[in-house]
Image (tube, rainbow, N blue to C red):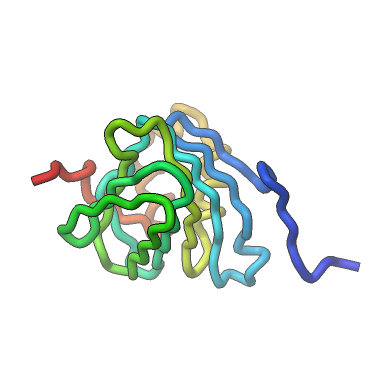
Length: 155
């Protein structure tokens, strides 16, 4: 009999260890029938996610450890543990680990789901794939990621 729930222990779930973060998928698209994906994102000191938006997806971030600087819809904000930030579709946003912090950890909800599938596809790619601009653009379009530019400078 198939279980009607999922249980993921600490350090469990599909995970992707990149140069700037280590992401664990805790609740996948398959677990929710496509309604949302929940991930634990362990950000390294060099983490910077450039300015981007999603046409159809919302993201919610809940900071567990460390400090993250977010740029959302023209505003800069500092998120410390206990901070929750919800970014609806169509809103430009970027983030980075705050200066002076060696890392940060946050939960991220991506709704509807799909980001876990994006990570799985990235995980199968080699360096040549990452350098193929057309391939990356097609993948980003498939998963509703519209890259706009680097993390904006603080005014």
